[in-house]
Image 1: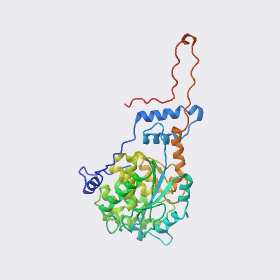
Image 2: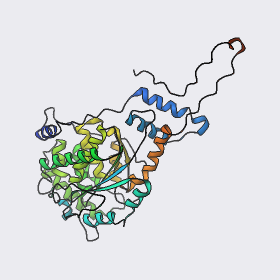
Image 3: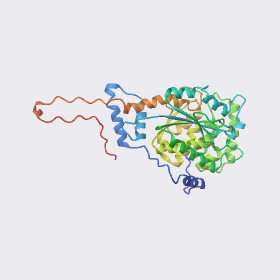
Image 4: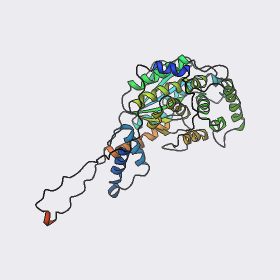
Length: 384
């Protein structure tokens, strides 16, 4: 991902964030370990003669092994968090046909859309997080109430969030991720205006052209594209001086993106696998990478919609989604459908029994010598 470098001297917002995290800083270790990677690849290669090759599942399995720093990684109790928030920007984006954020939330909670059904059938625990919905959300199972405010402000008129609100949202995300069971965290955003706000964050931090991020594809209505671009470019101009990642998030982003930043930081600190789905989650990962660079090492990408802008973002990460099914659904659906593949990849290393090579028939000249021990493990070579 092309990233605009921050000035050498930390800006006030970064200092504030570091102060906030002073008691429990995210100590995120890089996943690169050449000796372990070689051993994982060897373990998979030894089975090829009997079981054949597993194609793209093999590099995914190696990735999971490196994330857990284990030859036999095990994934357990996967959690899928859908972070929901309203945006002031939405008043100029919403159309008569668009469902409000509150209606989309209700659709999920009442299983009127495939996302909760897919999650249930795949064995994922689904939580909907109220990060900043404009309307009250009554307490009910599956809802985490962590509202920072009743929606953000219009980023074309003012800063979307204050720095205090951003810090509060990041802290809330860290607390949520720290309290959840398991070692797999899926992150997706929800909200009218959320993809556009995320595009503004990504454009400013990576230098990618805004048009490439907003363009859904060749079939996108030209008038709708130009209307969105005019609106977003006006917001860019208003906050043209902002470069620091946390200040960029405050200027353009949403509570759902800020809370995902904290959740990703905490999950990566605990060496948990991150499953990232959608534009808002990608924006959160980029911001989190500015705070603690190795966090992106822990992420695999999913997608719930065909969108040219998302293709551009994933290319910046030098990655692709695990599955591309041509869907146009709520973010998080891709995580639910991709999870069985991820679980299967880990099982290649943790549950498939290693075949022990039979011992050769002893040579008569060495019949009296003790037989060498049978080796059923992989010895890690020394790192260089």
